[in-house]
Length: 344
Image 1 (tube, helix red, strand yellow):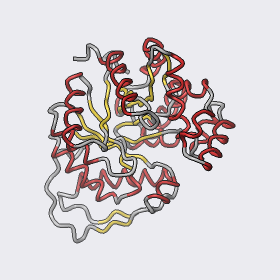
Image 2 (cartoon, helix red, strand yellow):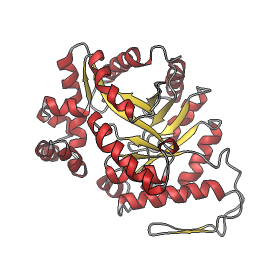
Image 3 (cartoon, helix red, strand yellow):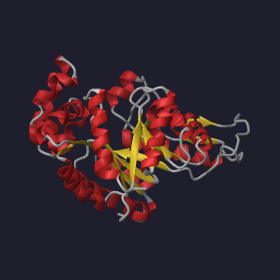
Image 4 (tube, one colour):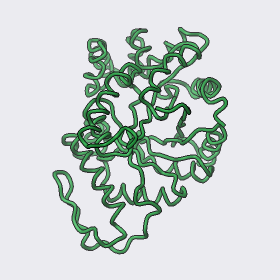
């Protein structure tokens, strides 16, 4: 959507704060626009504090905070705190995750995830805008009944229009983000073809429904990528990551839409007997290269190019879930050399 290529990075919660701050500073010095911290299990806000402390310009964002595992009030207050601590550089990225995690790991109700997340986004935005004004009295919906009659004065937020981005995989969440959010965060397992076809179409539908224009939202596309001069090694290094997502039953319709339904079901059966890395060998080369940007650096750059017709910015990451730290570091270096040179 723009001639200027804008990229985001990622910081890990598994590093000491000093190392997170140093990593974020390197990303800022390379010219990246922002950095994300993901909620895998723990909340993603803490590593972003370290990232904000180590930088001056770099935006910091949750990518994502799982919205359905905490109350809208807690999420709104955490977002306000993050925006204040970062000097107005925070973006609240929200997502619904999957039912087995939300209910099984976190013990929270899942409901109908699209409508549940819609209600959460609208409640969080209203809290950010009104909690300091005395106007906030009651928010009642299908999933939340929040009574603010005893709310004491809240310090005004740095911004009442703090941006909220919604993470999406398939059509309903893509449309939701286009309807009610300030941005859409692409799922890292998106294929480039999914972006150029399905995502572009569903964004348009959501925007039309809300009477909005394309410029009203920011689209940040995430992609797993393994640029490697050894093209076959690139494919092999992508397989564990694909096995991780394909082993989850809730993702099966997405993989089936690409023609990999049978492979997905086979991987799910394999995960039941072990962990996702034990099934990586079951991922065909074609499947790995559909959902991860594989090949030489030049091939990865060429494969990625069509997605810029939809994306405003990109987040390119090696499949850290399935690689040793030194392998991830090598891929991060190759990504920097391939895509970030000349950003400053």
